[in-house]
Length: 329
Image 1: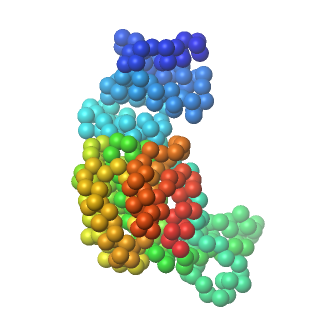
Image 2 (image 1 turned 60 degrees about the vertical axis):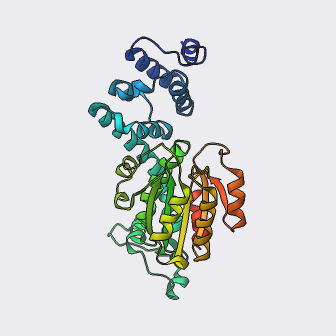
Image 3 (image 1 turned 120 degrees about the vertical axis):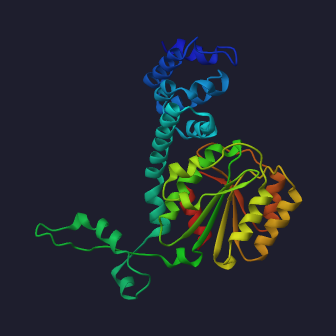
């Protein structure tokens, strides 16, 4: 069975198929979930979409219900969102919701720990450094509650000053096809960061136009469906938009999530970026935000950014809170 399952995918002619009708595809998707670990299933699903041309079948809810949710699938569904029929759209939204929930559960606590809260000793508490976060202090000390329902406070949590030194964060996310998976992670991170009182976040996505996502920050699923995944790339326009919305440049961090492949004028992009830096905005270019390997990006443009004092590098989702904390402080 395992051999036949692998042969159906990897021994078939490219752009072939798994059978004449969607029940065969759904059955194949179910089989691979039974015989392979989830990490392998994700790769095989991705290969099936690319090699066997089953993208059209993703428009059918029967197929969607058989697929294991993962960020790559969520990105594909977002790119198809405008053509999904109503029943498939409902199934697709549920898949994206599951993916978002898994990512949020993975990143929320370390992000709050690194950027939203700071544990301090009783001696430091007496010094009056930072305001006490009473909600988090109580919740994380509940394990010390006594039988007579007295709470013993062993650790006190305060809002960190470090996170307030650059409390304004702008996240600009490239929504071209090459950045699809990074956009998924970026959208979830935007919602998590927006929940931190220590930060004031604005977020937008861009291709050849700009879509402000700030009003969607309380719901990452709605935020992702508000994007328009695919199309060209005009980074210069996105940076110009950033210049327009920043009114406290010396107190602002701009995180640009893009592979730096500019579809418009590269000279204009560098010029607009230089203006942003000269205003005092701290800029970080994130070439990729995903669990994948080394990203494909425009090396020449990355060097141009480095010449402006802007770091440009890839990052895994788990490492992003530490990166952001360092940039803020």
